[in-house]
Image (tube, rainbow, N blue to C red; front, side, top):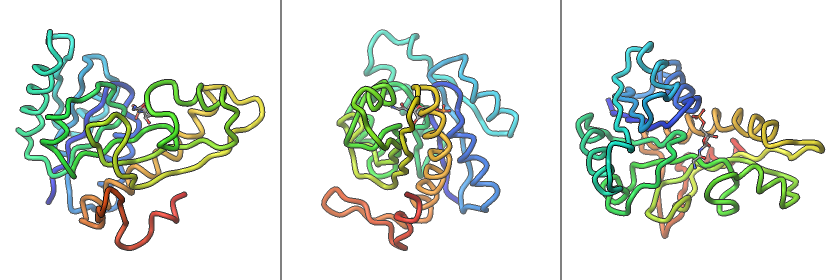
Length: 208
Ligand code: GAR
C-alpha cells in the first residue's frame, strides 16, 4: 500500500477528485495526509470529513522560504510518502525541496505547458488569441512549471469566453487527468527517459 500526500492551498477540487478515484478504483494506495500552507483552505474540511489526516504549515509563520520548505518537507516525510501531489499548491518550492522528492513529486498546471508557465494562465491564453487551452500534469523539477509531462488535456477556447468560463472548462478535464496520472505513478506505470515520460501501457493519448 503506497502513501500519497497531497498539498493544497485552497479549494482542493483536484485533491477531492484524487481522493474519490483512489477509493472508487481501489488503488494500491491510500491518501496519508492532506497538507495546506493556508489555514482557510477549503479542501482541509473535505479531507477531515473523509477521515484523512490534515496538517497546516502556514508559510506566513516563516521569515525565510528555506525554513518553510524545511518544515514542510519534515511534515511530509512524517507520513512516509511514496508520492507527493501538488494540487493547487501555490508556493514555489526550492530546488533542495524538489530534489528530496525527485521522481515522486507531481504538479498540475492549468495550461498546455510549455506555454504559459506561472500565474494567470487562462487570461494569458485569451489575450494571446489561443484557440485551444488545457492542463498539464508533470513531474516537478526545480524550474517552475517545467519537468517531464505525464498527461495533458485540451479544451476549445470558445467565442465570448472569460477567464471564469475557460477555467471552469479546463477544471473538468483536470479532474480526469490528474487522478489518472497519480494512479500511473502509484502503479509504477511511468518511465522517464531523457527527460520524457512514457506511460508504459500507452494510455496517455486516450486522455487528450
Ligand atoms: C487548478 O486549476 C490548478 O490547475 C491550479 O490551481 C487550481 C486549483 O484548484 N494550479 C496552479 O495554478 C499551479 N500553478 P483546486 O484547489 O480546486 O484543485
